[in-house]
Length: 147
Picture (cartoon, rainbow, N blue to C red):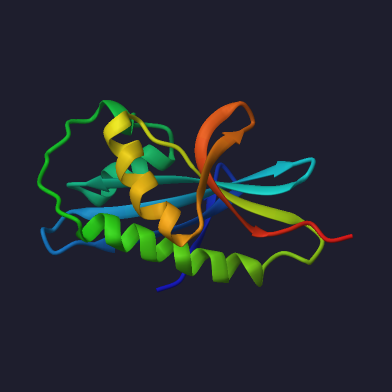
């Protein structure tokens, strides 16, 4: 499917991808890029919405997705799609950055139920629980820093 460059207010912020689910909702995954002294870190945000415009409003900071109503309509289709996008992004990003820079993907959660689900499935593909920049998260180094 590929990834689209995320540009907001004229500035590059990372990448994103969207998908229309079978239940007519829209799933979106965002990889927000952060330059750190040790390398590059991508922080993931994942959302499912009844309307595509809500996702766009969230990107633009006009909508707080965390306070939106949870519909409970979804099944595992959105989560499986997001996991596959994460795997695809690892391959995509390894070709984007020059060697010598540590590149890490970091996943946070909004509640313990989501943490448990993310931990259960993401540790199977190499993510580990730990602390990054003072926050507990699941992370995976997709490229180690070279000398």
